[in-house]
Length: 295
Ligand code: LIP
Image 1 (cartoon, helix red, strand yellow):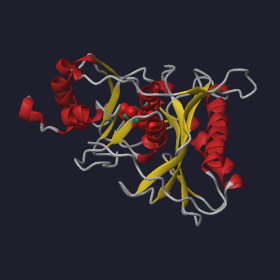
Image 2 (image 1 turned 180 degrees about the vertical axis):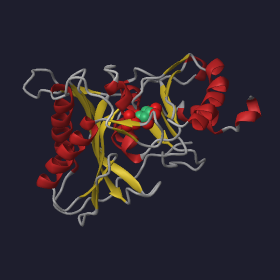
Image 3 (image 1 turned 90 degrees about the horizontal axis):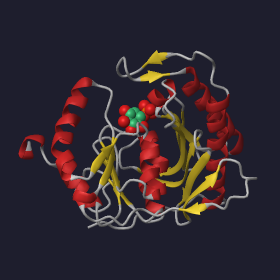
Image 4 (image 1 turned 30 degrees about the horizontal axis):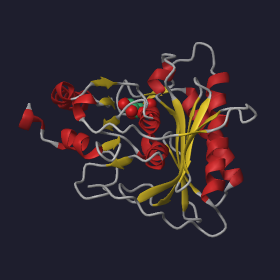
């Protein structure tokens, strides 16, 4: 059984609409930057948790750009970024940034990566201690930005606001049967984590319509919100991978949960599942069951 998440109080003097507009503005600017300013023959700048967990110079420059734009617009807010930005704010709001989500796709020039920007209330460093109130996922390859505010719905807009294309309201698929479910998922960078994920996948594959591995959690969550997949589930995500997409799914009528059985369990590293209300608990059950139970 799933429940709607309460709308957290915002600090005085700011509205969800203002925060959503700023999320869109800065995400689009960084999206254009990583598309149009990509250096020729760009390689790997460094590796992180494993030799395949790569960072490029553009991940860092995109985060620096986002940091600069947000501090100029909202100097009292906190910032938490994948590439190391960690500013403690005084306003009660924190910006959670993934400057390039889908970095491996970006490195290989596979057109499935995004800039993910969210504003959260609560402690962004603690699992289950924060909730998104505004967010944007900008897709440089499709020149689109998917965005939402708590209580204002989820939308897809053209990157260029002067384009005469009206924003499109998003809604999740109504699929309620696992056997007909098109499920997006993803895998970590560490071989032992991938081995465990492969065991879960061996169990899941015969029980769903098919699997899609797109390579960007932010874009996977947007696909749930727009109904171009029926569900998404992945273990090992960080706050920056899921913060904006989480809100886009919920504002599109979907539900996002974690591994916990309690209603409204928060998504996070243990597990993130997103789908329509009739499907989310069925998919969560698939991913929380012990591997050997059904292996
Ligand atoms: C990626 C996630 C993706 C996951 C990858 C990686 P990154 O984030 O968006 O869902 O499967 O392993 O974590 O590292 O490109 O920001």
